[in-house]
Length: 460
Image (cartoon, rainbow, N blue to C red; front, side):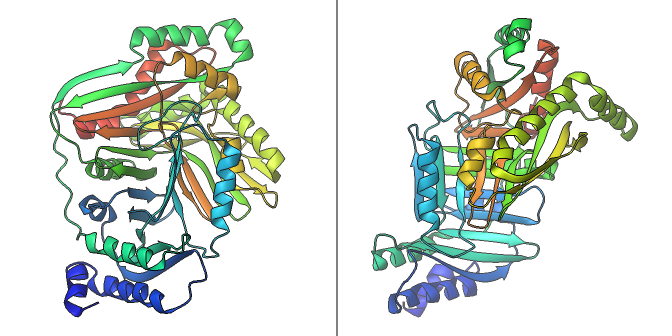
């Protein structure tokens, strides 16, 4: 490549890093390629990844920030896509992923994506019932350092075309620019599905004595469609949300300019490191106090509340039960602790397992997702009730989002989430309905869960 072309590709942003990557990509023309999947990387100084991601023009766009670590990821483009608009069996998904894993021994290869809450029903356009990508370009920040990675997929044997595709992707890279200010939008309209009257009916159905005997918990949810007077930058919203809930998972998927799914979720589905598994029971909610004393009183009242403690215990028991056949050991907190967020606080129990040899990520996803914290118990009966009565398709709300990797995989439960479309934001919130649940109190819990994101968006 001529020098002036190299400067044109890389001149204003990470010029030396992308120049080095271009050299590495071009060298692939001269060496035998042994792995179908090749990953190249260089080190770079840190920069704000959401600002960088917002400025990019290449789709898909992915952002991921785990809850407990100082790492975040911004990724663009795709060199391998697994997209399933129609129903697919979990065993088939597992087989596809295991085949893909076998194509490289590189330990840093990650497939980012998600599974819908209910993979038996139609899902959102572009997101599908399952959608994972191997990004073309990734920036992974850890502390004050960034690694820039480029992935190439030589499975089809078209070496020159894949090399050119990687070079073309680098050409599109834009320098980061400040996010647009989080200006408040004017509310043009709001609709809730189900509305309160229907919500009350559903809660009363679930809390009937005969129903509770066979289905002790159903997590009902609500879709709130918020129409506003201007388009919304999903990455500005996510950055603001991130600032207000720093101890959450923060992630976003934008497969096209039309739709973006973002989430600041407190809930881990699981973290797997080799055969070690970490998960949790997160269920039972109250608000935060206006001062430390009130906050502590509310937290203690939550710990003492029979309804919420029972709900959390049901989740704990279910997770231990489904992990036991897959594990050599499962341990769980006997008593819940308080997990605090900006506007609300939850009951939380940590759960750890040592997996049996050979247990795959898709066996874990099949066993754990959806959890009783977003579906109910028994799972199949609760899901059938939701499917038939709730009145809308949840899509990726309460789905499983994260990444798959040979040695470490991590997924969050996509609660506290939003689907952003032109001049519209779709918000979702749920509440666990058990014996003793009150329709008005549970409806207010939904409002509490939306308070943070609504305060970012709307000028009331």
